[in-house]
Every structure is written in structure tokens, then in C-alpha cells.
Length: 88
Image (cartoon, rainbow, N blue to C red; front, side, top):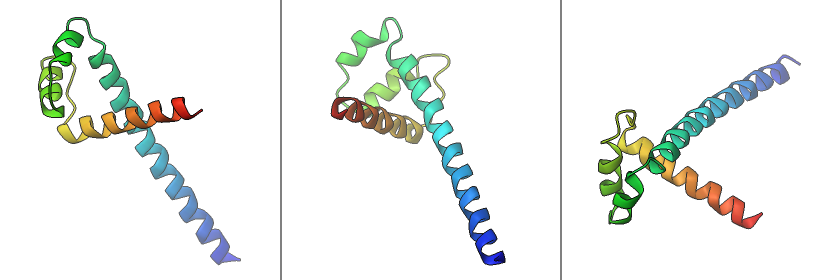
């Protein structure tokens, strides 16, 4: 019986880690969406040819403090959300 309890505890920890990770991704995508829709940035973004160029443009915004890795994670999450919307 105690083994079952241990497994349950481990499962709860996993759920907590997942939700914490999900919250972090949600925060990243929120910042990213805000930055991508900023007035004056959209036009410049159309000329960007790579993620690095987009990232450099977004770094000019005072509140955009994401690392490049966070930026890439956010882009991936946004693409996944778009796919889910189009599939549904």
C-alpha cells in the first residue's frame, strides 16, 4: 500500500513540474505575441529573413528580455497552437 502512495506522490510532482513548465511557456508566448504585434514592428518583421533577424528586432523593445532559446521555444509553441486551431 505504501508503494502505491509513493507512486502517487511522484505523479503529483510530475504534474507540478509540467504545469510550471506550461506557465513558463504561456508567459513566453504572451510576451512574444505582445512584441510581434507591437506598432511599427510588423513592417520591419516582414523584411526579416531568419529567426535571428526577428529576435534582434524584438530586442529593440524595452520589455523584450527573452533569451534566444526562450524566443525559439515561444515560436514553436505558437506554431503548435496555430496547428491545433486549424486541425480543430
